[in-house]
Image 1 (cartoon, rainbow, N blue to C red):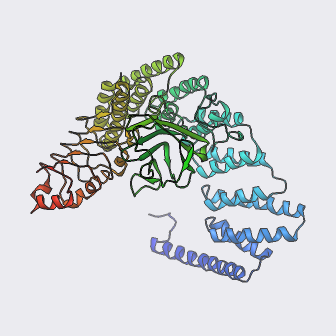
Image 2 (image 1 turned 45 degrees about the vertical axis):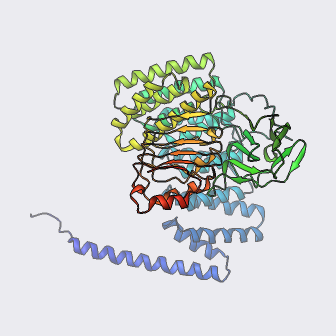
Image 3 (image 1 turned 30 degrees about the vertical axis):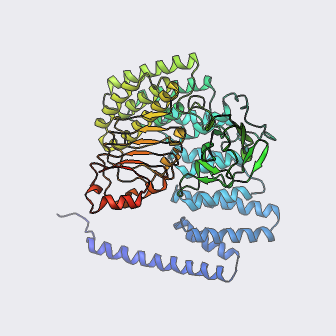
Length: 583
């Protein structure tokens, strides 16, 4: 023990640290209070600038002080000449740089730097890009720096190809770089856009064609560049199969562009004198300029969504004045105009017909898969084989399995259906924590396949029983369906979107776990509802059925609600139109 330097005990050290912290805190609080006092008195002088600098140097995340500092700088702009303002703001850039060394992810520091750069009389954008390069070399996922870089690029007009080369460098040095892959996905459609398609016959020519931007571009990439990107990303996930970033980018490459904004279907019914309009995306028909013209005459109608919960909906309906189209001996021609998007759709109601429609099928809209060229099909087939080879080496890699499914969807969703289902079963075993997500995704794909099969068969019956469905989607595509069979699945509810099935006459949903019928709402043609062996427990759960005026047959056998006292008389009062009640 001899010869050792005597050190202070832990208790002594802690006490000294406490006193030091208290001393610093008093200085900090005094400076803060002085700043607040000056701001309240409207003082914007050099001393206030020094005080805020002193405080922000130690705590760059004090938003109020940054605000006060900007007020001071804006005041100095009014009393200094242009050269002095330039020097003040250059010093401010140096100050924010020192703050970023304290906290490279300081919201306040990055925001303030952007504010200063935008106000500089003579900004040096090359310096700002160099700063971004330096910060991203230290932390390539610093999203504050990425946001700032995008602002600098926009303000300085850096060429898109130069920024794409920048992402090449970052990805080349580190494949596991979400930010670089994402930035790349915003640049490619600008540098390599897909050739524009000829205008739709239902679309009126726009007044002008603004230049593309990341906010307004269609996000489609030309096929030649797309094929090159497949090779780049394949190198990434073969290098590290467990890294997520490249797999996410690959999924983006396999995705489809946003759908064209259009009227996808118009349906008209004589008996109910009702018109239903389906859009390619949810809209508010009361605010987008939707007009109905009948035989050349504009009609005053009130558009309403299919369910009171929806202010935005892909399907809207209206009723024509009584007697407008009820005469079956007359042919009527309707046009629905969507003025906001300069588009319209015509629909003819012929003599002797009680209903008519005009629509684009899911196949026409390339809703679930895009038409592939011979070259792209060949490349995707090759990609599928490569990912399958990787999966043989990494049999428990969930990213491999999910990507195989997505490639199969892109190539031939119906032809690969059984193989896809087998891969989903494996996915749930490999990644059990996300089994519910995979069940919902599998349900989505099976519904898409069933819609395609229904359209190929040219029928209005949608049958998807015993497919382990856990959710319902694409219900706007079922506007014309008259008979739906959802029996023997794992559904727990019929959501509000179910009300889009405006032509539905028969609903079969036996042997599920349905507790909620919220979406069976104001379906004007619904006659039969079969709900045997579900989990409907109260009469309140059946309340929405009262809004369906033609309902005649209701099967509730095997539901807890059948054990309710006086259930038959209660149902007779709730649903007076039902003549065939099975309990």
